[in-house]
Image 1 (cartoon, rainbow, N blue to C red):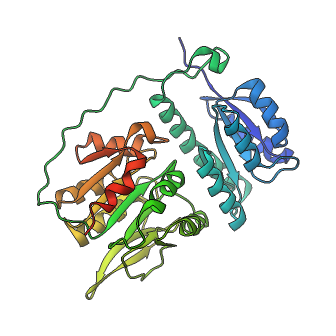
Image 2 (tube, helix red, strand yellow):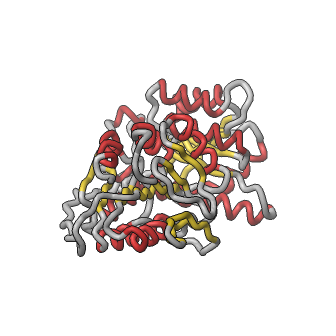
Image 3 (cartoon, rainbow, N blue to C red):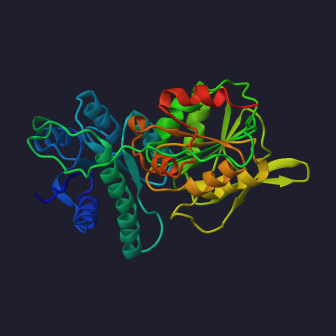
Length: 363
């Protein structure tokens, strides 16, 4: 039996942008356009009728905006992956973060620079990543009953359980003096579960790579800072690493930790992407391995791809401890799965336990 296509509903109040998104998405052979809607109220009716696998959701719309529509979808228990379509503005970034925390699958940032052709290619590249992440998520989700999807569902490849052989460290484990976290799809929701649970007197700094473009990482830091006893900020070049502080890598740039004289601080660079990512978790983790050796803790959370595995491997060789989020609580199990398969993970944890484990493993 051939694979069923992923059916997409496009929701945007602008007829031109609906056409642009339709043209972009029709280039993906995995997709089928189920329909379009000009606002959230009409979208809800179409979602109930068409049962799409995926919905692209504009934020600012008349009658019912994107955030309210998402909340209605979640309240109704409708299982569809909502991808928010956001502008590069502070307000849209804040609303997008709220949507991700409420359960949106991911978001697309509308291109703000370049000519029309370049913007189309930018959208295609962003959607390619989201579609791959969605297919990966479907691989790990339990099959639905036919009635749940009007007797059709996307066929999912079988995924074997992972039974890693954990690699021994080259150095004895030490108490962590820094926590380094890598996360991608599903990250804002995961971080909003972990960071606010950590005590305000945490004796070490935390450094985080969350795959996000500029503006959105700043909005993420501000959102987490309001909810936490810790101090959370978008990292800046030269920031001194301080206990009870969380530093989030700025979107579109690389971040590493570096020893300067007798202190450790943040360095922000324009170094090229790694694993198609900037910021990249591997880039950060390498610097943590070099600067902290066995006095570090690496945490790999939900996300697509394998960014973080090579860097965590270096940390493990130095004697670091490594935690990974478990399959059941990930939005996409790709990044933790790759680290687990590499045999470098000490503990596989549900999201609800990670904050407690971090607090128990720092000096």
